[in-house]
Amino acid sequence: MAIEEHKDVESGGDLQEPFIQHAHDDDDNNNNGSSIGMVILSTLVAVCGSFSFGTCVGYSAPTQAAIRADLNLSLAQFSLFGSLVTIGAMLGAITSGHITDFIGRKGAMRISSGFCITGWIAVFFSKDSFILDLGRFFTGYGIGVISYVVPIYIAEISPKNLRGGLATTNQLLIVIGSSVSFLIGSVVNWRLLALSGLAPCICLLIGLCFIPESPRWLAKVGREKEFQLALRRLRGKDADISHEAQEILDYIESLQSLPKAKLLDLFQSKYMRSLVIGVGLMVCQQASGINGIGFYASETFVASGLSSGKVGTIAYALIQVPFTALGAILMDKTGRRPLITVSASGTFIYIASFAIGMGSVPWVIMSEIFPINIKGSAGSLVVLLTWLGAWIVSYTYNFLMDWSAPGTFFLYAVGCLLTIVFVGKLVPETKGKTLEEIQACINTEQK
Image (cartoon, rainbow, N blue to C red; front, side):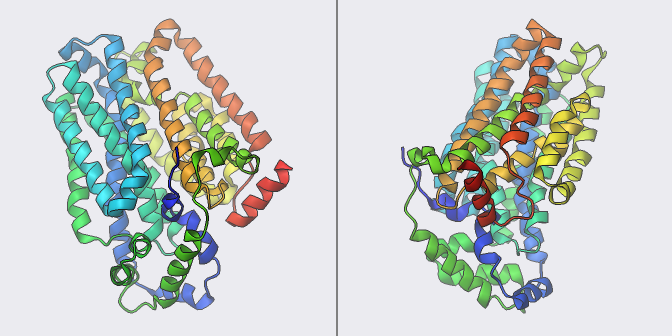
């Protein structure tokens, strides 16, 4: 099946690097002196979607016992409910590129919010497992789209000197959303927790009325006047946008001259190393068991001997936010390889260690290692496989715990050990390198 190359234009800051790096020094001054208020506002609005993502992922952890008791669900039925979010997200990931290409970044965020709102309402009113599962699937589809469009939108609106910092807010708000869901779920019942999931969706829908569409998408679809107006709103009325505007137009024109990549093209020998690295890192991330532990944290803490899962889930929530923020700070200081290696090694403090590196580094490296002409197709494949892995882990977790709790965590520890070996043998360090230098490094090692 052919996957259109439009994602290459849309997939964020990394694709902009080739032309951004050739900007003149006076453009740096212009960017630094321009108003960034609209960029910050637009980012804050977009990451309401990331927060919604986090609340959805974190919903099942504090609610497992209550939902099973109220709706008389078996362990298998609740495992299906917990994992349906990943099935919906797989479908969302597959269709997200076409949606964002057809109706724009803001349109895709609206579609996502609509699905999430519908899903949360279905969960709130559910009286049986069918409506409950349907609601979970709808929220999953919504966050599948969000997981693709929010990082793209942030990268495409940001000036180059702020892109890295603003891009990290996506992962940070996902973690905060998950933590808030854990905390609220420890004091309210599962129906009210579902209702609280509407808040970030509504904030996103309202906020989208006040922010511009991505200038790069507007340029791509030929709406040049709107492109100029959107870029002007983002850079400030006194900023000189002529050079940046021309670079965007030139870059999009150069991309359109590249051949469209098909899915099978990814398996050519010249792309194989990049594909192995991208897929391998995501497999390692899921093999650590994060989605099983995160989805069912409350019951896991009870099984470990705590009288109540609330204490454990609150600790989980409080730990992951600061360590995710720390990981974002360290990523461009220590490098990707050391950070993910230390993260995979630190299983004795699981959530803190995962948050500092394994949660975000695989996504960053994935965005850096693919050549520009296959980035869209490769990204679709990797994201799809990531959600597939998330489904497998989240669905099997409770069954594995019933089989052997120590054995389950030994399996995940092996996954972390394999991550260390994989990174040491195959993953290049990408810190401080241009995309062209990364490709040269991969191609040299491949020969």
